[in-house]
Each structure stands twice: as structure tokens, then as C-alpha cells.
Image (tube, rainbow, N blue to C red):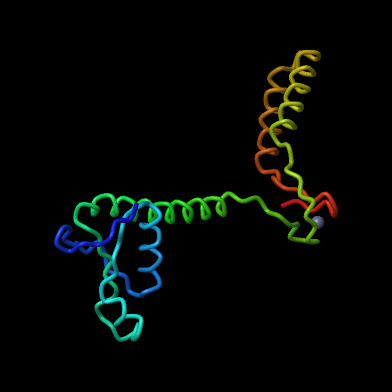
Length: 162
Ligand SMILES: [Zn+2]
């Protein structure tokens, strides 16, 4: 519950200073949501002249609420950072959505490991059958290199690989 501000009972402490009134209002609303009464200092001056006030808007809370309010604000800031980090991480590992050649969205991942295992199994079987295991081993190495350098993506429409 938000209690009315009584200056004699609760000395205010300034948590942080916002450059514009809008951000300060937002923080105040978030704190109010969490049941912490917050007060904005210098708000009127800053909203009247947001670009000329060097002071910004002070976000103030009762000293007894200061720790809680700070952890709430830190949590919000932390979430913000976490969302941005996740977005960029997803961007970094994102698979292509379109064929660079024809623009088709029908992209297949080539199954390099499966292909390699099948080839290796066949070569071992043949090597055992013709008693040429050393030869089979070298062929498997060659096939392994081939699959390592093979393109990981294939377009189902035009067959383009990249
Ligand atoms: Zn294509």
C-alpha cells in the first residue's frame, strides 16, 4: 500500500536523478506498482524546460523504502539489459531465413554428420569385404574433410548451397 508522505515521519532520500520527467514518471509508476511511494523532485522545472535543466528530475523515496526501491529499479534495469543481451545473442546464432540467390524461405540444413556416418559405415563395410581396411581408413578421412567443408545450408527451391 502507498502511504501518504509525511515529511516529519519519513525523511526523503534521492535514489537517482532522471534526465527527463517522462522516465522519472515511469520509474515512479513502477515503484508505486510494487507498493513503494516515490516522489519526484524538481519535476515541474524539468518538464517546463527539459533541455535547459541541468538538474534533472530527482526520484525520491522515504529512507526506510530506499533499499527496496533501489532493488526494484535495479531489477528493472537488469531485465532491460538481459532482454537486449538475449536479442543480440539470438541474432548472432540466427540461421538464414532466405536463400541469398533466389530469396526462397525454404531453407534446409544439410545433414553433414548423417551423411558422413553413412559414408564411413559403407567404406568400413567395403574395406572389410575386400580386406583393404587401410584404404578404407584413408577414404573415410577424405570423406570426413569433404563433409567438413560442405555447405551447411541448401535452398530447396533453386538448390543453391552456401
Ligand atoms: Zn534459392
